[in-house]
Image (cartoon, rainbow, N blue to C red):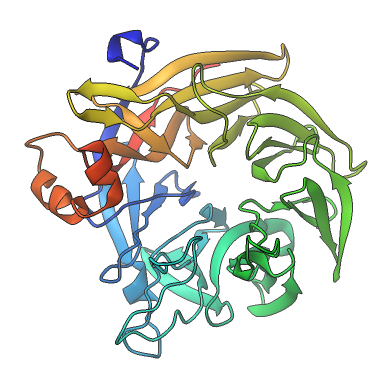
Length: 411
């Protein structure tokens, strides 16, 4: 699509995180009790770990917190690094809680598999961690070889729950005793299986905990809803379509969850008491293919769902085709009306090409996003050199960087 054919843009401002080796950001954002925004940028590289940052909304200052791989150093030298934070950062008390995941995959595998490299020990297992006084404190470690790909907190019971990758183990961490319990495989043999024989099962990326009952929910690729209650895992319901949910959030007023399905981008409401799950709408950017992102947020005061959806690509210049844009959508739960507010665009004219995180905090919206590197900008040469051998760069003719984005939310 040509730029002039896109809808009017929704303005956004960007803040440089100063991490050229950063390549991706799935979830990895949260607000502390002091109002400071915490975020993470991940990487697929062997020579770098994920990075943690803080952002002060008052001064608009970005501060580095830690190299996660250095902060969670393995007892085995030169292990596959803690390259990702794939979970929401959650405030529990005065600490921000998160978890580490591996980002280095086997480049030869037809589906994502944990990578190995000469001179590197296997991935030692992801850590649950807290950020306290700008210091990363390890809490408990997942089994060897397993990254932590989904996590949710039950602050009232001082519990964390997580799913690992690639095996799909369901873990429960008691934050008072730091006792970690492994409930075993939650989705068959997970992503260690084979697509050819049907044993490969995608791991759910978003866990849901009912703060009233303490039950934990997730879904599978067939749309089945599963529940952990005490120590029993059981199938308790079904999504409105035979799909896994992509992202799910809690509405404390209604005592229900809202979520979006992975393939169709269908918005649904799930009542954990009655186990009823119903489709409400389809949240998709105009002119874009189906497929949901991990960017669902809920404004309880305004009863509004906020979502960043993948939008159509843009022909920026001859031989440069942006693969996608990022459109900002809201859904009014009272009127059942979807509003499209246009694709996000920075003040310098660059489009946000992808977003997989979204946070509403103190009247603003935040996301760590992919954006085209501006020619001549600080670090542009280094980023292009790092990216120039990737298939994406060769196919598209441009490189992307990760930036923290802030924009005004709408209804």
